[in-house]
Each structure stands twice: as C-alpha cells, then as structure tokens.
Image (cartoon, rainbow, N blue to C red; front, side):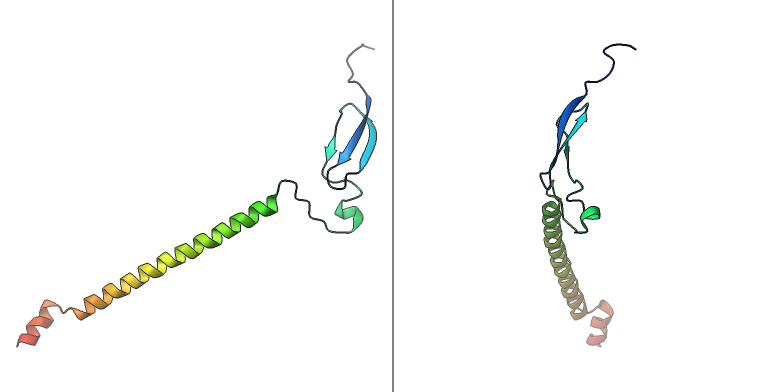
Length: 106
C-alpha cells in the first residue's frame, strides 16, 4: 500500500447554525457547519420553522414595498395622462370645425 496518499482522518465538531447543536465525528474535513440538523429539521420535529440565514425575507419585503410604491406612481401617471386626454377631447369638442363655422354663418 502506498504511503501518504490518504487524507488525514481526525475528530471534528459539526455545528448546526440554527439550534447550535454540536456533533463530534471523525472526518477528513474540519470545521463543518450545517444549516439544519435532526434536532431542528421540520421533517424530524414535525414543527415548521423559518430559517432565514441570508435575510431573504427582509429583502423580499423591501422589494415588495418598492414595487407597490412604484406601481402607485405608475397609476398616478396614468391617471394624469388620462385627465390630459379628456381635457384635450373636451377642448376639441368645444371648437367647431370649418364646416360647422360656415353653417353658423348662413
């Protein structure tokens, strides 16, 4: 058997980031961290938990609020444009065409 070809096998502590449970195992990698373990995983516990390590919920809520405010601005712009068009149509209806003006003269 060849020497020095296998990785070093050592005792390592694996830490769960959610419930801070520590497991000691023998592995070739040190300092392993996991998001969920058997103590806090919804499948094993039967309880639904929200794990938000990257603040994804906060990012989503910020984007949603921005989208709602933007859509309100777009609606306001559309309302203003519609009002301008209505005013223009009223102005056109109040002015007579050349044919109407000639008919009024006779």
